[in-house]
Length: 230
Length: 179
Image 1 (cartoon, rainbow over the protein chains, first blue to last red):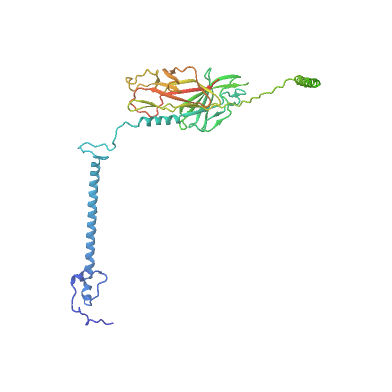
Image 2: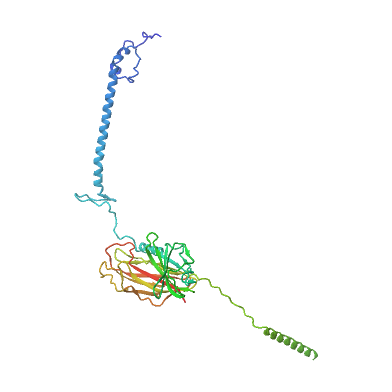
């Protein structure tokens, strides 16, 4: 198909070279005017080098800006940290050379808890330390080596396991020792000592024990009488 | 007249019959009704405090709990027959009232205790008397289902080291049936 050059009103007008050197789309040069083709082709390599250089320059500038920002931040952080000590709470404390305000300070004095708060805490401790002791106060053993009706209960309301130790009153002999966990019972058990026939006045000591260390936390006693029938 | 005789005779007969019947019953022997008693092992169950915490405030004031108590959950009345008070972990008990809190040497490991059972003004008071002894004598009775309040006070010289729940004394209550 033949182009109609004669009817073009802009025929013979050369477009400014600036536009040719810097086309909007270098890969696709404008083809509005057929004359352009003669000038465009030899100039194409120059046009692709220049934007690359500019791109490089721009990226360099970006890197510089980032570096500057980083430097600024590095300078700002310690400065803020240094000056932070001068602002504690809402109070603007003056800064002195060689003196650092303790950043752990707070407004108030060390009067601590009120009386009521302390007593409430003590009451909680007492409640935690209440111990219920329960057993048969007259356990009967058929013989000194047989099972007897101790009927020890470590109530489920208790907070600690209990160590029960029974001592005779007259010569302080340990005749029974056993620990019972919370909520458990010992209906019958044997004595440590083969007691001869008779009645023995004893004290059963119930000690709350720390379940992790076995340490005695407190003790209460019960008067009991052990009876050995034969 | 005839009717009166008849009435009298009838009454005599009735009385005679009643008397004769009573005599017959008595002749058969005395009736005894046995009263059986079965006693299961009674529940002996008492709740006591094993911790009597004390706090010395930063100002040197001594504070104690006001809710300690001894509770009798047993099937009958019980009595507190013995109270042991002894210093532990390097502490010694002193006579209550003997430690002058204002002038006692700081860090002296002495403690004195006063236990008040029941009413603050009319209850039984037990004081430590020094060397792990106290002036408790006799017994303190608790009826079935009774809760006996236990107030306590202490004297402890000022301490320069802060403690948290350090055990300095031991109080052991021994309880038995009220026989």
